[in-house]
Length: 323
Length: 289
Image 1 (cartoon, rainbow over the protein chains, first blue to last red):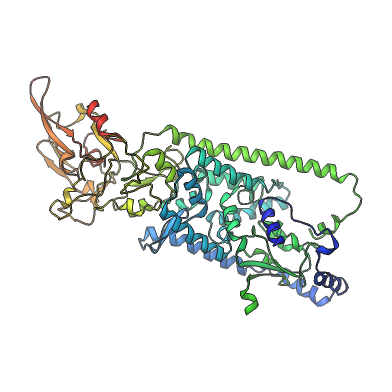
Image 2: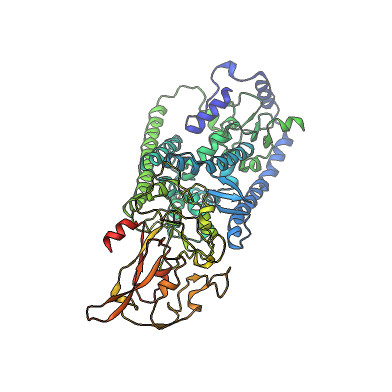
């Protein structure tokens, strides 16, 4: 329970907790760390070296296929009139069933100041869906902006390696402030102000209904991320991500971390969009032998691919123990 | 990265805190600037929406503009079901709201070839609605006296359209350009070859709208706005005596007009002699005309 609250606060912008008192770290973890200190097995290092030479992209590729398929289904439903997934990411019908994006629904209800019955049904469906599927997995497995941003991130990293650009981090709490401000703005102005510049809605509509001038804003955001701050929109601004993060707090689908096989090398944190959830992988931070990552984790699986020892893996809470 | 954890373990650090504090301060200022920048941009994007309140025609069944803007979720489902693609989504430069639907009547009017205002059915939020909830009062003159009858379905048992409020009203804004007023006829296609607008012609195909440019007309006296109007008793040619004493005709908009814009799309004059005024009410029209 305490870890759950800590993870939640961390998502809102708090610094990840470091174990301070001696009682914080479990007996099991202390024993594991002791063994690891003594056993510097060559075989393990050898395995490690091998893995470094051939990076895996298993989960990334699966994710890209799913992301492309979902967005393509939107596009083809309209273009070919196959009517499977009509609408855009903000609201749609899947073979007739309403699906409403949680953040869009919230914005509309705040602006409109009425609860719309259709909206409640569609919102509830999507809510349950993402509770099951991991909340922010929406970001990495569905959101089209996540994909383009993930691709341009490679440019940013290449430029940063060559010291052409410097990374400028913001306070992670900024996103929570944005969430509140956009909610207040919707309520006060009576208009879903956030939708004016939501790159998620803009990109989704551009894909389905054809490109427009609004894409220029998305392009500007990408430039900002390439030349100034890595993944700035997803990390510090997007209220959609925070909404889904909250939904995923109790989700059984998550990436779990085991201390025992971990080398504390930090390859996972280098590829991660939200590295604070991987703080436990820093030597001396873990308090229990096995744990799920915090709710801010987008379940993108980059860390699972990056980890050479299998310390990070996908799990369904409860189900993994049964199998 | 791997050493970061151990270097931060408790150890006397005399100079580090100030540098750390400075970094934190810079990060804080950056974050405030990010907040101001993004929120400022979003508000900038909203200004044209609020300033252009009474411009564009919204799809049939739209709530009053303020409520419509508040409740539209910008998914485009209304656009997807429209058989003539009359509905378009606003871009950032159009001042109608990014992703918010509107109808540009001169380019493509709503001809009700879907028979039932399908866009209303498709709307997930009730921004387009057949029946307004009680807490939304109807503007005076926005309501239709009786259900509009679709000419295309006039001989069917239920020929009416489930529409209680008008989208706007047609007005003869350029009477001097009107061919009927000039006493002229018309022959050929009404718009130029590049025109992409479509319409359903019952005598061609009941279910498939065809390009307007593929349907030439032949008229002794131009009465296209009257004959092509999809709604019964919404517009008629009425005789009047011109200043030179000659007997002329002009189109007169009636109370059943829903503001669909077919008359504006079909008008052969360039620019159109008759135009839709979005969200106009009948009472105001009665006084103004």
